Length: 114
Length: 112
Picture 1 (cartoon, rainbow over the protein chains, first blue to last red):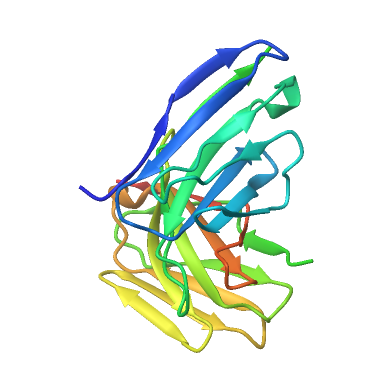
Picture 2 (cartoon, each protein chain N blue to C red):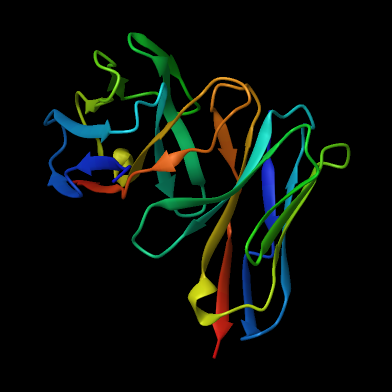
């Protein structure tokens, strides 16, 4: 089954404790992205990647890191989480290129930082 | 900076009605526009993708239109069903690199 998977689905952590949210897709997609969704602010892009070893900042990259060492994986790293990073996070992937293709989203990771 | 607005924020209609959801964007230089559906506690499901060169796309009971010059898109849902209840989001790609800018969504409730 074609899908985007994220782990963990739920995470409660404390301020400053490094964490990684994994994202994997099995569709051989070139493009991958991370978004966060907050009430009243909607979905905002954190980082995106157009291919292996090619990443770029989205609209809200502060406090996050990403890496794309393999085509299928795009982990999101929070080196020192803070309470304002409490949010619902989504990973997405697409075939990319032109014409542009639809994005497939993972099920989401609900993160709480206390 | 691209801004995407969806009106209304919430809509409640009886089953069987045809309805229209609206999406507007401030910068007409877009590569594509996508409509998504989000169920509570779930991820987003892509419904329709309209390329910048297209005027509309159809999938089953759904029809999406795009008017780039006026910065507007509509999602038409025919013969609505309770299973259509969800939040509907529109998003525009302004860079051709899948850098989507989302609207806040319209929360749709279909009453049996």
